[in-house]
Image 1 (cartoon, rainbow, N blue to C red):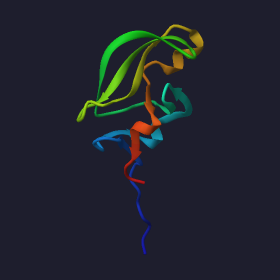
Image 2 (image 1 turned 135 degrees about the vertical axis):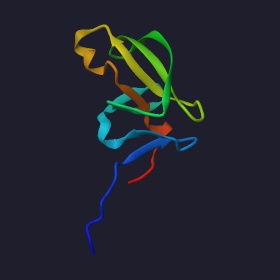
Image 3 (image 1 turned 90 degrees about the vertical axis):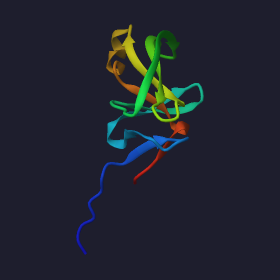
Length: 107
């Protein structure tokens, strides 16, 4: 038998299965949302951002926008638009997706 070639491991929206992220884009699995564990992704797709707002998080004040599935419009997490503290700048432009709102698609 030949070698099995695997494609990217994908995550989808838990409601409609729209592909929203790739496992290889995970920056950190140790994030928390108000609803439990969350993952920090360097990129996400098939989503749109809501209104930007300053939000007080556990790590300080950030400018964030909720991100919605482009197909079913479910809120899946948020995008860091701006970090006000120098130590948090690495989060800018990245996405936090709540673990319970994404499902493994192709593994």
